[in-house]
Image 1 (cartoon, rainbow, N blue to C red):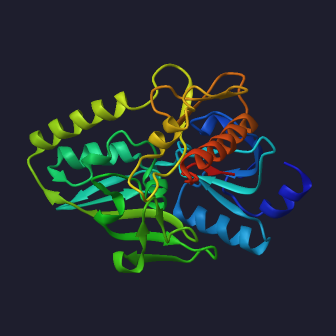
Image 2: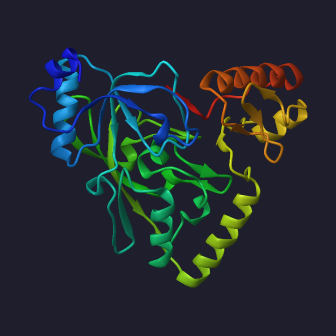
Image 3: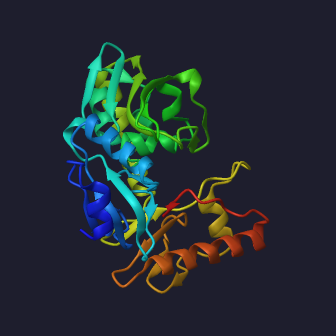
Length: 298
């Protein structure tokens, strides 16, 4: 670790590392390194990291499952925190409530709720990500979203203060929420009682349908744009503009679903960004609608 790192993190026993490559933690497997990187083992560790960062004016980034993230090749300044430790990935069921840590995979939360006869979120099966990122972006489908099932969310602010936000203290919109300025620790969802066998059948059917609508093969791919308020999907708009299969460098618009960009082994972050800008310009020219990014860019 460099002198700055030694100075900032000297008294912090939270396993902070310096210059850690982030590509391995993202679905696209692109991008540079985190200036500082930590995987806290407890809420105490997390609070310590947040307080130390605030004291030293170090920006903090929370790395989720990396399924909706594009990292700059220049890397990411400040501290990147990843919730990989079991302490942040627990899933427990209490009656009609399921409590899930921010690091718990959304798919695992869904399958556990279904096995317990708790319905409501099975429509989200096949959407990648963990609970923290899924709440932040209010993951959903045409039939509903995660936010509608939230009872409360446990969070930490930039000062390291922990609190619990009730549903009426949180705003959920289309692929958005008011949780941008806090660190999500866990969420409590209140679901509906249903037949486990029927839920499992529904979940499996939706899983198959969703997989057929996504790119197949070995190339890394990512969902790029939000669907516009007009009711037409972003993929349909891109197809109308004749952009399926469009390529810039090692980044390609999927032939199966035009709202996915695939990245070949030689592809770079800049290739993806250039292709995104080109798609936005062409779609706006043809349809008068500029697609809004769903993908997060660091």
